[in-house]
Image 1 (cartoon, rainbow, N blue to C red):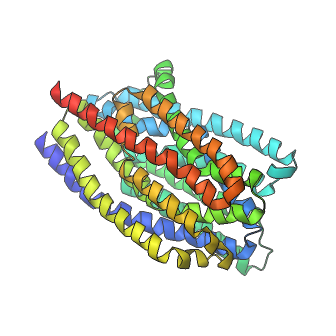
Image 2: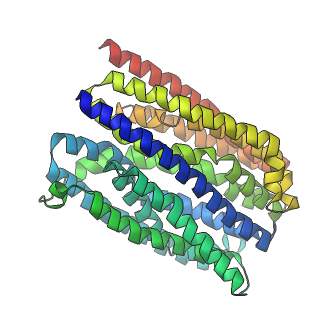
Image 3: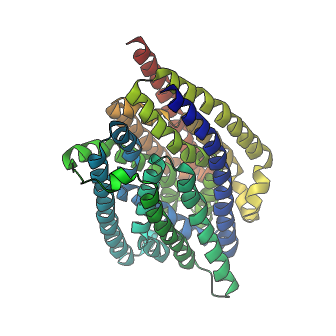
Length: 428
């Protein structure tokens, strides 16, 4: 066991470096795409694309059904027990439910979108929804690849391939001299996810153990459906928390430019979250294994190492945001500099979230799902209730404040509770 732990730590060190590189490159690619589209569409036109991507991201999280997030918990446990049949059954169960849910949501969303006018009369959203199954499969499939201890390959697809293809297609569209619209931007965005589906499918087959692929599947549908819902609900709430501000501003803002300004400021301020999302997948499968072994020393070591290196990155991020935030926003256009205050507020709250991003999953692994769900639900409700008046009165800055206050409170509280749970386990 000691050799296994030492080997796991050695692999982690190498994977962390690569995942950090992928995260930086992913942000650069996504940011470049946003800059290209924002400069081409302007602050008055970029809002349609921003709303489309935000709304589709929320639905994609719902379409994943929480199966990918739960895979990081259950697949390592099945492998540890050599329960290959259950692992094979869960893999098929996940892909099947993700496909059914995503197709259903895509059809309902696309029909509803094209039948409406007004706030959601946005053809870009209708186009992006057509690619919803691809988005959901990439999201769920990449979690399985990570659970198979192939986080680098999973990160390559989600962090480089998808945004890289999107940026390439956007540049080709502009060079072809076709008119750039929010809808054409949505097409480029969707095709990027379509490329990701092909890559993820191949990776799932290549990284899954032969014992699992050759096993006769055993299905525990009722058990799995009961187990995945807290992961689904929490992932959905976090997605809503990150994206709903753009949608609310589309409704209450006094002009469309405010929506675009907040979207750019929020995307920039949440950059540090990419580091957490990439590396958390790596840590969560190991947390599952260590909990299965009751290895508290291993858990404490992972926590210390993660705090040191992510804390350093977070400090660098905050320094760059405060000192160079206006210059960064100016790359989108001079009108976007107005979002500097919103950028700083979102950056601080996202940093608190990043430093404590493992705590909700840790609490759920210890069967404190109800606590996590209730706390996160209240956080989202507070954000929505505050965002409506603050967004109307103070625009992008008001929406940022409505996001920051509940997020900081939630993650600090969960960090305290996670430490108490670890102390309790040590005493048992």
